[in-house]
Length: 141
Image (cartoon, rainbow, N blue to C red; front, side):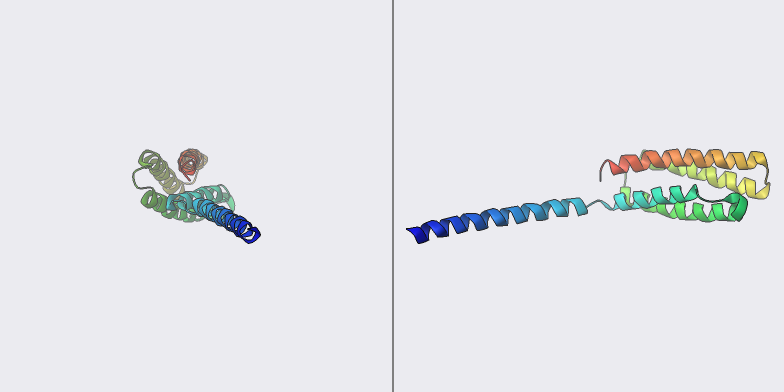
């Protein structure tokens, strides 16, 4: 009788341990099983943050255009990974990106206080649109 009680307790203990391990494994898998758009949105967010660090005065407009190329690639990744779920937000970012690119091209052709102010304004608008997109994506991650 004592041996049977010990076996029942051991079986119960092992069953609880196995259930706990399986639950823990499923929770870990849940946390690491994010959609690809989560990573691509994070990369885009980082690229926008890096854009703020571009020193046009010290490094010229080529530095800005180089960072815009990085942003364009990251935005393409978000667009590919997001499918249609965030199409409105992506469209807004693309429009803002085009405005930054156009203002940077104008400033490169004719550097002036007004053209550089237009670049700064367009960069600010792009940052706001990316912030909205990333926030919306992060809410699904």
